[in-house]
Length: 313
Image (cartoon, rainbow, N blue to C red):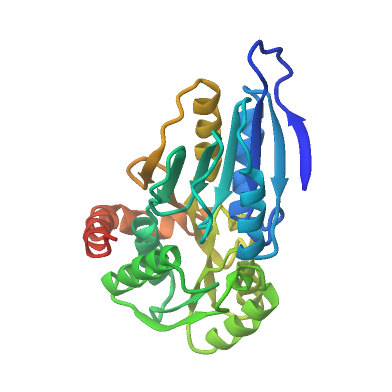
């Protein structure tokens, strides 16, 4: 656990905002969602001074334990808690703290804001882009574990592949727990097997995606995608693009609102229309697929609306 003071150094008359961040298992250095969240903290620190406490649990059980510890007792000073992903079993007793959970469906608790990222449409476009690059139009999906948010990626990419006349040969999961998001070695082994028959592997696996990148580099004529942040630099020849969630801008805005006294509890849904999710193309393939994606954008958004209606809680 780390505690630091971060910010622009300006003196404030009001009490210093305390920000506590609970990363998912794997934490910083995943070159994915945790690093994107941290980038938002750094950007927020350029305009707002706050103390930062963070923790990285080993699993969901430890995450809930840390969260419950952070929310014990009442607070008099401003305190904002940020978490990424669901915290099953956590109570709604926050002791006056404001809580924001990113990448989470609606949770009916006071003083809690959940932010859900609509990823069906950019995943759909990833499927279309994949089929524009892969001559045999074959793809597979490798996910960390079976979760609702993961399923949206899977459905979106599959729909895009089908729209573009391709075939999904396999959908596989690395684990039944969050360990599937931090096991690049296992991901590489599974991806190597998948690449024997498929041209593109779409990884929805957090830090495990690094193993897919390595497998694609070792094969010939095989491709993949980055996830959560632009990861093209990790494989210029094999990464067609990245399905990005703008955790960085979201976190920056959340801290800005908290500092301004504009926190609002409730559920927020962000997607391509709000420029909170998008497909960022690797410049190597941009010209090859740009026109195809522009033609498919409206279909991606329409398919997303249909999918949302079909999967309402």
